[in-house]
Length: 112
Length: 112
Image (cartoon, rainbow over all chains, first blue to last red; front, side, top):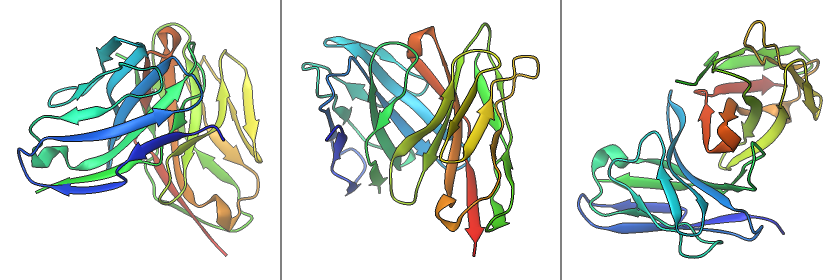
């Protein structure tokens, strides 16, 4: 089954404690992205990757890091989380071109 | 920059009512336009899309027409069902999808 998986689905942590949210897709897609969803703001792109070892900033990259060492994986790293990073995070993937994105189920992060 | 505006709702309708959710966009050139749907507790799923002016996207009884003259992509359904209750996002992408821009989302509740 074609899918994008994220882990963990729920995470509660404290300010400053490094964390990683994993994302994996099994569709051999070139493009992968991370979004955060906040009430009234819709989805905002954090980072995206056009292929292995190629990443770029989206609209709200501050406080986040990503890596793309393998085509299927695109982890999101918060080196020093802060409460304003409390949000619902989605990973997405797609083929090249202005085409459909496939979304993961989301990770709800709370930073205390 | 590129942006998407949509009615934020919430929108509450009775079953079998007619649905319209307005979406307008700001972008140079010819973006591709999308409607995504998010059911409770899930990630976003593509509902329909249109890639050029006057194209009509349709799926599951929903329709939207790409209107370049009014920069709009309004979502319509002739007879909604309780199972259509969800959050609907209008989105656009340009530059071969390197950056998707989402509207804030419209929550739809359909009552039996």
